Amino acid sequence: MSVAASDFVPEVGTITMFSTEWCGYCKRLKKMLDSEGIGYTEIDIENTPGTPELVEAVNGGNRTVPTVIYPDATTATNPSLNDVKAKLGV
Image (cartoon, rainbow, N blue to C red; front, side, top):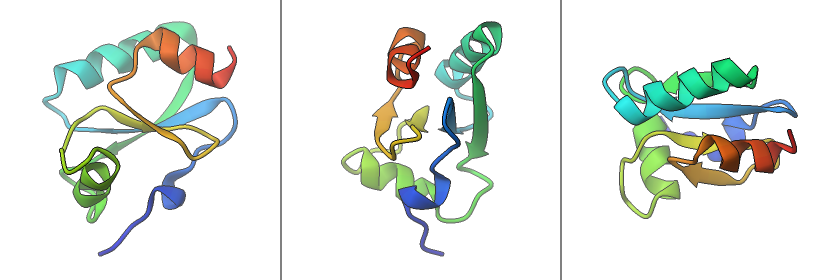
């Protein structure tokens, strides 16, 4: 199944986060987003067909999580909370 980053562009003020259940960096980012009230849609790449390949495509062949997509369709790999807040303008 082929998917594109454009399939996962979030609503303004939120992000889409590609993650895995075991990823410590993902858990940390989710906890920080929750504490700041920033909305996100989580996509588990181990349970969503096509998303591991999508993550690899936007990360130069690396299956690195968390990978996020912003409302302007840009992506970031393992962004800090400050990076996310700056990009969302919050």
